[in-house]
Image (cartoon, rainbow, N blue to C red; front, side, top):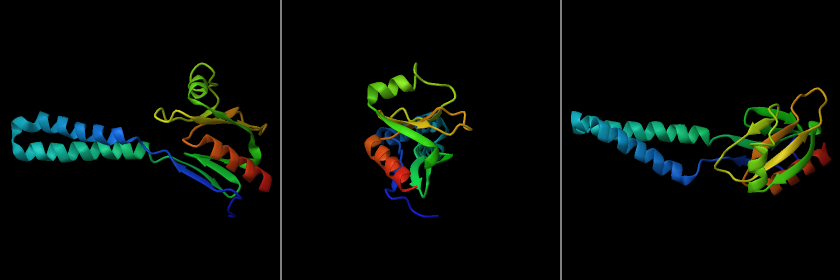
Length: 153
């Protein structure tokens, strides 16, 4: 597999506040287990924090990558030749495209804690998906990388 002309990789990590919430989940479980003694309370603190942190980490582990001639967004893998125009969405437009403008056939890689997004049209006539909605912190950079990958393909 050859590398694209403009490689791109982004991990949509969970915000820092989620790690504080993970700790607070552990504190809550510790308080619930406090009547059973110190050892169960400490186990609840450690176990609750660890479980909540694993959930936050797994939700924030999704990536968007351009590898060779394919765009990989989460579990979707789309050849760049099947992609059309990319539209950078500011926070207001992104909100509109994930609510009242959304098409139920579209592929959404949605992370509500990321305000900006990129909408990429799908031009493959065999694919019923009209567009990809990709939450990204750097929509301009991703659009340029897709454009460069299409030009080199």
